[in-house]
Image (cartoon, rainbow, N blue to C red; front, side, top):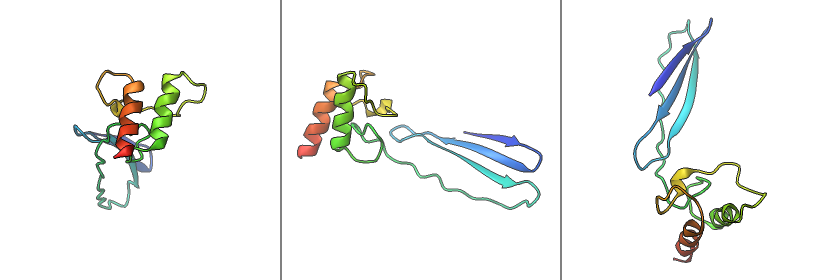
Length: 107
């Protein structure tokens, strides 16, 4: 999906790419209206990694700590929590995710 915005000198495209099993990618692209330059832009699609609470592409101790902080209602929570990190599709992040992450790390 993309949206096009135009101000007096520029065009801005807002691009959203979604595919099942991949992280949603969003970006914007702005170019000068008068140049008429053709712009090509590749959109990298990153596979979802179950248990990857911070979406850095790996399941590690940071993710386990985040899951434990969420479970304990800690005052120090991750700045962003991604729903697709839910390992058992119960629409919650908690003990199952912490156990899954720790088991994944031990393999």
